[in-house]
Image 1: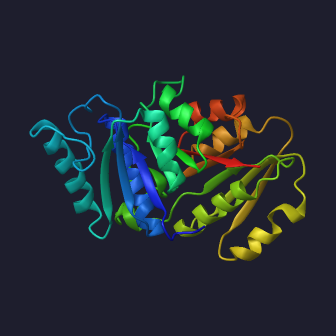
Image 2: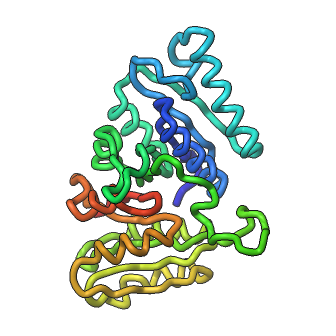
Length: 274
C-alpha cells in the first residue's frame, strides 16, 4: 500500500469511545509509520475531552481549546515519535469523514462499547461511513486497550513486548477481493502476526498463493467452514487482534458483516473491494 501522502484518520466526537478509537489509531499509525489525523466534524462542539481544530474555524477559548490540547498532548506523550494533526470542520460528520477517507490509509471510528450478550451498538454515522468509504474503515469498541491486541502476558513481562494476536480474514471465495486480501496480509505483516483465513467450502490455491509469496514472513492458516462462516468468525474474533471483512464497492456491508461488526470480540476492519 502506498504511504506517500496517506494518514491514519480517526473521527473524534469527544466521547470516551472515540478517544479509545484515537488511541487505537495512534498505535496503528505508529506501526505503519504514518501521520495520525484527528478529525472532529459538525457544527456542535464536542463534549469535554474531544479534539478540536484551531485552524479551520474559530473555537472559543477555554473548554474547547483545553480539550484539544489535552487529547493531543496525551497521545503525544504516549507516542512521542508520532506526527499528529488535529482538525475541526463544520461539515456534517458523514460527508466530512467520507472526504477524509479519500486521503487516509485507514479511517478509524469508535463504537459505544459492549452491552452484554447483545454485542455493542454501532451508530448511524459509523455504519454510514463504513458502507460508503473508499478506504478501509476500522470500528473500535469503547474500552479497547493496547494489551487487548496482544497475546496475554503470563511471566510478568511488559504487555507491549508480547506478540500480536492473529489477524482474522473472512473471505468469500466467489469474490474478486484483492484489496481485501491485500489489506489483511499487510496488516498481519506490520504486526508480525499470523493471519487466519476463514472461508466457506474449498478456496482455490491460486487465491492466496501470490500473497503468500509477497509476504513470505507471514504465517497463514486456513480454516474451511461448511456453511455459514459467521459463527466461526465470531469465535475466532474472541482470540484475534483484528477481524477483517469485506463489502462490495458501491454496496453497504451485508447482513452477515453487520452482525460481525456488532458482535465481534475485537476491532473490525470493513474493506471495500470489487
